Structure formats: structure tokens, C-alpha cells
Amino acid sequence: MDLRVRQATLRFATPMATAFGELTRRDIFVVTLMGPDGLAGHGEAAPLEAYDGVPAAAVAAALRAYGDVLRDAGDAPGGELLEACRAVADLPQALAAVDLALWDRAGRREGLSVAGLIADEWSDTVAVNATIGATDRAGAAEAALRARRSGYGCIKVKVGAGDDAGRVAAVRAAAGPQMELRLDANGAWTVDEAVRAIEALAPAGLELVEEPVHGVAAMRAVRERVAVRVAMDETAAQAGALTASVADAVCLKISRCGGISALLAQAALVRATGAEVYVASSFDGPLGIAAGLHCAAALRCQAACGLATLELFEGMDDVLPVRRGAMAVPTGPGLGVEFPA
Image (cartoon, rainbow, N blue to C red):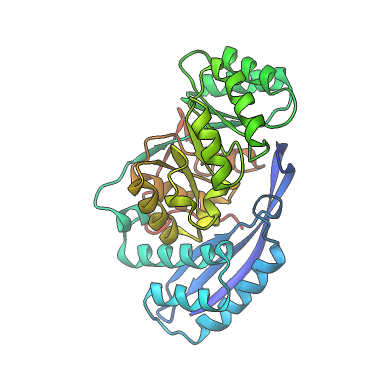
């Protein structure tokens, strides 16, 4: 198996403000896995050091090591190939690229979409949320109004910095009473801060609050003290978190999980606890977003998924576009999309 790697850069049309800093670009590793039969599969590694603590250099080194392993592996089953890579570098963000390429290659070989490989029945579309990163009331209200007019049924507002109360109120007023409104603090609060903030913002009508705090113990403490549903995001990466029953919902991401295979396994663990699963991106490229769509469709996620992020990048408006608050699941073989050259 021949693993080829190139680096690509996606630039945000407007800088994205988050609790872990302002983002202006995304550097992504695009991989092509060519088998001895001449059939290729494509994947991507999308580390985001400010968010997941994984430097691009570490991913590049892991991918080089995977190339050495795969070169001598022949056409072994995909699971064996992935485990051989894990043995030399257990880095989820890098493993995701190989895993996606293996699924893409399998789908192309069988003439099936990835969703069709995962399940006998799957959704044709996936409901997604709009994300508002504006730090001022007027900008947040304007973005919410655009989302409403575009047909979104769910809006996520980044909180944990600045005038949260003013922006949330402005978003609710612009979005209308029917819009699902979720907040994402990216773990910016302490337990007491989270409880105070959630109680103050709850009158706006909240679907859920995502990652109000970091850590299993802190998540449990917040959930026990507030009436609003609490969702786990970054904390899901901690050992034992998925089965700790400390959240009403868990956000799973292709990059952090280590690809499609691991995301599906983690979804099964979460659902066994009675919690809801939804899929989101860490501002991935088109291959990562497509993988997330296939997983969400096969899992039949009911909550809106955080996959409508390609439109935040320059020149990506027509790649897996959002229509009336939903994204169509690619129907072509494999992932069904290409990463633009």
C-alpha cells in the first residue's frame, strides 16, 4: 500500500472567535492510499493544536511512520492495516486520515457510499446547526437572522467570553421562538461560573449547553445543579468519559475519535448509557465533513449536527452545501467527495 500525503490550507472568510483563540486558517493533511490493485482511497488529518493540543508536526511524523508500515503491508484487511499504524503512532488525528482512506477505498471497490457500508438503512440528509462566532450583539443578531432566513432549525452560539447575555438575547430575538438555541463554552467556565451563567441564560430557551466545563467530575457537578441539558465535547476524549453518564448528550468528532471506525464504536458506548449522540467537526476539510455526514446518517442522529462549517472557508460555499438547515449525504461510492487541489 502506498500512502501519499500533501498539505492544504483552508482560510476562514471571516476570523472565527473561539474560547481557545481566534482562527484565521486551517492546515490539513490530505492523504491518498493506493492499493496494489490500483484503487485509491482518500482521507484527511485535521489537527487543531489550540483546540486538541496536537501539533501539525506530530501528525506529519505519524503519517510518515504509517507510510513505512503500509508500504510493506500488501492488501491486508483494513482493520489490520489500521492497527499496524496504531502500533507505531497512536495519534487519533493522524489515524483518522488512514481510516477515512480505507473506508473511501472500500466504498469505491464495492460501489457503495460509506453510509451504505455502515448500515442497511440511513438518512438521506442530516440536520445541522448554524454556528455564530460574532463577539458583538449586532453581529450575532445579523448572523442569527441570516440563519433563520436560510432555513436553519438550530443555532449554536459560542460563549465564555465577552457579553454572553447580550449576544444570546440578541440571537433569540432575531432567530425567533421556534429556533433551537444551543450554547458552546468550550470549557471556559469553572463549575460555579457555569451554573451561574446557565441559570442566567436559561430564560432565552436553550436546547443544551455544550462543554460548559472541562472534566468528568466538573461535568457531573454542573449537570446535577442545572435544569438545562448538558452536552460533552472535549471532555469526551478523557479516559472513561463516554460511559461516565455525566452528560445528556455527547458530541463526537471524526478527528478526535480517530476516524469513522472509532466514532461508530464510541457512539455505541454513549448510547448504551442512554445519552444522545450527535456528530460535529473541528473545522475539518471536505473529506472530514463527508465522513461525519456518513456517520450521522448511518447513526440516524436526531439532534442537529455541527457539520455546517465548510461555508466558513473561502471558496467552499458549493462543497457539501447546506440547504434549508440540512446537508445531503453524498451518494457516490466511498466518501463521495474530493478535496480540491
